[in-house]
Length: 267
Length: 294
Image (cartoon, rainbow over all chains, first blue to last red):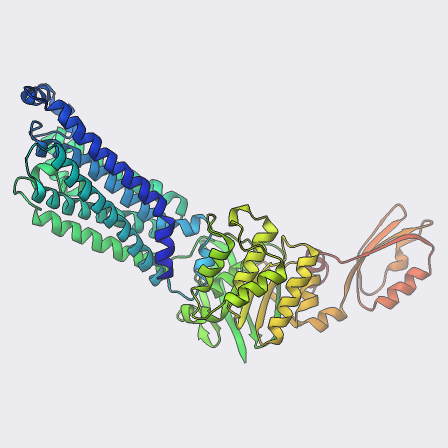
């Protein structure tokens, strides 16, 4: 419990900054929607988007969403929220495990009467608590700003489903971060390596949007698992991707415990 | 009873040697010195005992329990001071010590205050603002605050001024009198000689000798440097116990092991203008005595 509280305290400031970031992102993004959807210009946005080549649309994450509707607009914004959530979870996961070795505090913590297993559990719980708060802040500010700018269009259910997708993605990237930090013999490289994997899978997801021939690769990038255009309008979470996510999270969590208990600490 | 029992402990880092076939026991209530030059494997041995790293082969027990299998349980009664202390920077000294204390299921507040007062440590300061010596003090308090039965010290005196070293040694002797066993690693022979009952000497990852300190003290090693009034044949000092004999102009130097009186008489026979008697460092002793005995 003491390790958990210590970690919560250590990450408090970072969590506050991330939360402020999300609130501004959603407020700013939805504010843009109001600007673009002023009376009489509902069609212009879609026309503009349709005139763009497919590659450009893929980069902006627009795809098939109807930008004249608040749900469509929020769906585009969701991609960026996912990216933020993934970066946060991935960095925190890698950092929380590797920092004891990086800051050479492992000679303090690991000589205490506490097993490595308990250390990992406490740290995973702290990371989990942080990503849940991240998710709830995203949920709450989405409700508030979508309602404020939505001109009556209700999308409460859609937002809840999107947040569930976001949460699974956060868990995947958190476990990627912790597993890499637990396996890696060079703790300073853990954060770089895990964010590298994150960026590659993000780029892969864009590449798939641009080129439908490589569509089968979608199983390799978590960013394709829960996309707004599939989740919204009653689509829901696809069972195959939920199962795949749970599988990845389980395997990587076991790897985190296993390797952290097996290897020599860098001291 | 043996508090620590190390059996054929071997650790390789890939192909690089850490320690090889290290075996020795530390008995309950003794202050055991662990001495060797830098890089000999002292820290590797200690880190293996604390299961920060795992041995390639061999095993060790502490309080009669395997040091890896029962690691969390054993550590309730271990206090450890690493050679370099690193702590969470954005914490205050008091916060860190309370955090440290929170791992032991006992109230350590009073002990923290006591120790801080003895060592003259300001508990309200931030750890990043502390000097090296003060960080070391935090390490000492942190290692002793739960009144452990086994204290493991890895080169603990670096960074402490002589006055603080004195207080620190007093503290250790008090803890020892209360029943604590101490494993004291160092590369400085004189501090081990002062404090310890027995000593294990390690070199290139292997234990050369486990000796009583009294035996070591009989063999006091002194480095002599004598400036003579006139040229003296260095053969004058060619006797049992003298090693590394050198002559440079009128300055003769050597390392001496044995009865100090015999060498003093020898010196009295000649006219000298100056005399230095210093503690040779460990490397020199190893070079001239232990290597030959191998």
